[in-house]
Image (tube, rainbow over all chains, first blue to last red):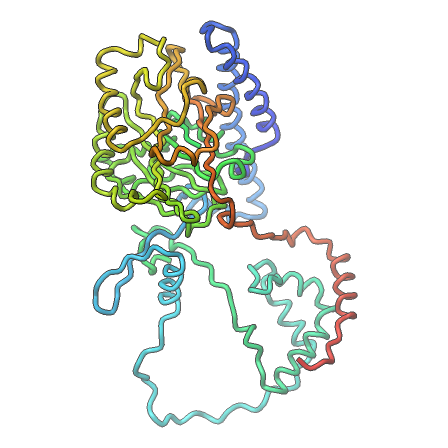
Length: 221
Length: 283
């Protein structure tokens, strides 16, 4: 169901269903009043849908002036979509030998996108053979709880969470409860010089670049 | 499910908002969808479905798209492949691969004034049949609105439909059916599929066909007149296939609305949970 759909429309569909059943049982009688009644009900229902859709948008825009004006602008200026779920179409990828390969399987598409998002290190390093680095900085100061509070406050609250599924708003709303525990963990990490590998995992959402002529190349994402 | 929406915006809006649509149907084949002139190949689609349409949808020389398919997001994308290179905006196909069964689904719209779609379809079948027909586990289904009339599928008493010309036009389709060993699945006793808007007459132009050996796949095939959306004169046809019902369904991931959290309660719970954790153990 779309956002503009409402209970009133839902009720009308139930009524329509009954009228359709009556019309069905009177198929044989072409001039039976049931057909006229159904036709009139369908017309007013179609009108009600158009009105509900338009009213929902108007109402959204009026409220947006106070709150979501930038989101509203995005809705208006972005290319239209079919409003369904997307699917990554067949991808064309250039093989090292210059041939173009067509990719259909989901796993292969994922690999092609990963290769495009995270290019491999170049074979030859451009760093000089014996580089001279500046003097390393001193070890950071003892980690304080205030610093953790400070950084939690700076996070954006409703960003999509990582693999653990914990959104930043939870940390912010419960900072007082959770910071002492986090402090323990972070202090130990700094002390021992160990970083949990599981924290290096992240989720990459694949999003179309708007307005591309064709989406059969990984570069369009 | 298959339905001709008669290019109606009202019909399309009602369809995409039908309650439980993605629970009731996995695949919906639409003939004559509503098309907004400003956005030719953006055809309004229900939230939980994926739209597939012919590759030539943007090609104005090929005419407007008259055949599209909605595939529920409940079906794993690894189990179906859209086949948009049909060469016609009236013909769309998907290939399903479910548990050893390979099913080729064609959604075909044929305008009543000409045979163009039939010609393209005939050519497509000849050229590609090896890819989807070969073994007993390969099945083919045609979901179509050919706009043809013949006593084979129409009510025999509707003599007005069977003009010599109509019968001649239908012959081409019957030959195609015979050539590919397709059988009618939708029984005419199910009732008519069209209640003409203007003439108020009833007819049976929408057909469901499958390869002879695939008949046993069909658990049911019915005309659902009471589910007809507004402003189209065709009725939906619903069918179900008896396929191994296992992993093909993707469960929706649970997601939470954190904006509506009761933070006081949440904090209390978190506090107790933290107190119960012994963090002094080495990991």
